Picture 1 (cartoon, rainbow, N blue to C red):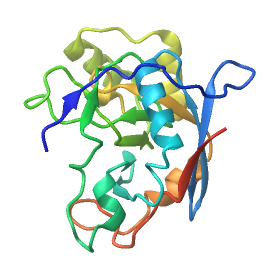
Picture 2 (picture 1 turned 30 degrees about the vertical axis):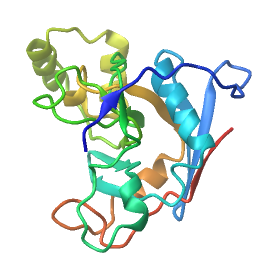
Picture 3 (picture 1 turned 120 degrees about the vertical axis):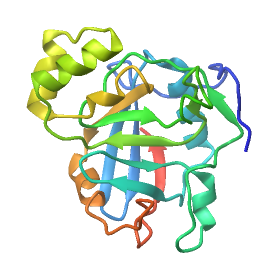
Picture 4 (picture 1 turned 180 degrees about the horizontal axis):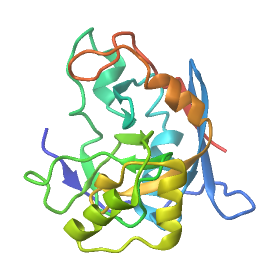
Length: 213
């Protein structure tokens, strides 16, 4: 499927909490995952809210699960997928311009995308997202990534990476548009699922619904 990108304009209303941020909650059979959406990535935030309000994510699968890395969902083709069907190519028919800035700490909510060879502008999928589980990170790893990408990690970022972990090799490559504020144990449980060679769980793990709080 050929994707085209559109700018998602804030032409609808949503409710914000007292701290000025919008929160969403993913309901799964393993429990709920509460997310904070970043105001620093307004096009991704607004698009996610729009899709949630349309019930777009209801009954979709976490179709790609990798322990020590992440869980991925949001492919509309997964709603009626047959056993063993390869997933990951579906979407709403558009992409979102990159809003790259935040890094991939454990619990980061990021937009999936096609590889650079097809997508040099690093535009995000219109619907697919992943939540980083990650693993412990060392200063040596961060130094190597910083040199290869030409950027610098601040002391606060280094401290968090070493304390909670993450997946820094994705930094500068994908748009992080939120974070888990409650329910990382649910993410950890989902990553334990038995899966096939494409990292799709052998038993379907569905997003029951997502709600804006």
